Each structure stands twice: as C-alpha cells, then as structure tokens.
Amino acid sequence: KALVVFPGGFGTMDELFEILTLVQTQKLKKHIEIILYGRSFWEEILNFKAFVKHGMIAEKDLELFHFADTPAEALGILQGRLSHDTATGGAEAPAISQTFTPGENTPADRLP
Image 1 (tube, helix red, strand yellow):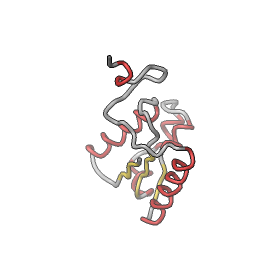
Image 2 (cartoon, helix red, strand yellow):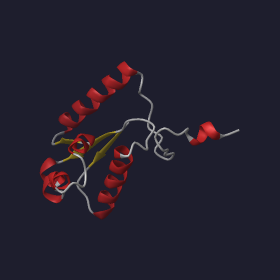
Image 3 (spheres, rainbow, N blue to C red):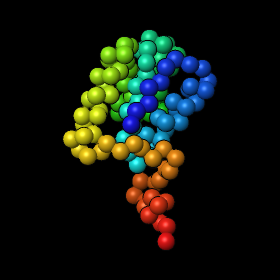
C-alpha cells in the first residue's frame, strides 16, 4: 500500500526510481503511496523541479510522491490514503511483481 523511502545511497535511488517509473507508467494494478522521509535530504540530492524544467517528467509527476519530516506527518499521509482506499474499495496491496500494459488483460486473465 505504501513505500516510505529514507535517505540512502545508490541502492535506495535505484529502488525509488524503479517504483516511481512503475507508478508513472501505470504498470501497477493498484495505487501505491510513496513517501520520501526527510525533505531537506531529498531536495538537496534530487532536484525534482529540474526534471520538469528540462521536460523529462510532467509537472503532474511531482504528485507521485509526498515528503514527510516526522513520523506523525508520514502517518497522516498514510492514514489519509487508507481512508481514501477504504471509501473507494481499493484497499488491496499492489501487484508489484506482475506489471501490465494499461488496456491489456493481466497475465492471470490470459491463463486457460
């Protein structure tokens, strides 16, 4: 349901960008909330606005993640998402291991 990413090195960046790419390209079956913990770290290390400025991502892509600086703030974001999922019936965990192309049947739908 969520990914909370703490400051880290290359491995952390690799995993973060992998999930962001899957969310951005709508390859996940369900929504996953992405929280970057420690705004000052993330804004120093990654200039997300430069991605938009140079046309690498759409400005709307900045909505794919949230920043949190305290455990309470992160919990509030997660609780808001859980409330939304409960209200819309979308509380299932995402099928990260099974990606699909939007508009296509999922691999399970193609089984005999």
